[in-house]
Image (tube, rainbow, N blue to C red; front, side, top):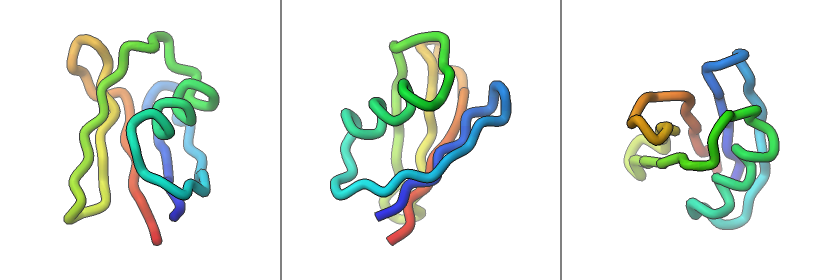
Length: 69
């Protein structure tokens, strides 16, 4: 599956091919490519829409991601 990541700060976006959707894999991609200023991130994901949110420690939206099969 392909995951499209979007980080609001700096308008950073990229696609990544992954074989398993879980928070560890998503966080690794975000921390490596997202230029985020914290490692304390929370992810939410809706299986029905295939879309997720990336939140910082203050529960503020800093980005989003979506999956494509």
